[in-house]
Length: 165
Image (cartoon, rainbow, N blue to C red; front, side, top):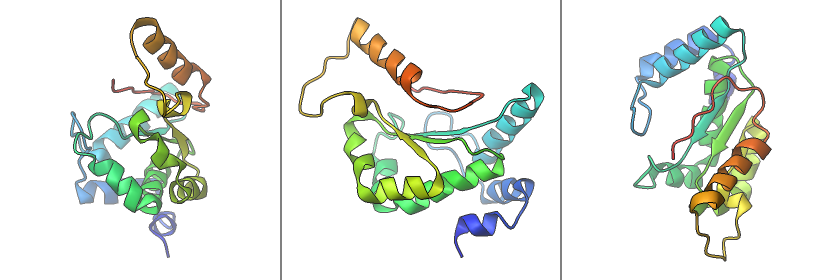
């Protein structure tokens, strides 16, 4: 039985309690407890009457490339973890953002298959640029690329959209 199937035998509140018991810290600048971040999202969404979403970003906070290596070696576990977090906050909105320099990673069959299995949407600015062409990201071009990334992607109905530039 998979971890997601086991999680779905519990209530979302029980899953949040299990996550809290694991004492998982976010990876990156804030290093907030994952359970606290998820609980805050649930509370704010209920207060505002909106649906939450899970947006996971493997970006510049991953200076050692650890998270990208994990995605490469264990895509099924990464996507299942995102699905469990989404179940814990009672949402179907799940997005994984990968930096442009690693866009080819999410083109791999293993990552695409795992993402599809767990309903995780994949996005990278690398989808909008030619990997064989040097790209200058200055001024208007960077601004327009960011507008396209934000405006043209199907993010679903999210309460929060966090971007770490």
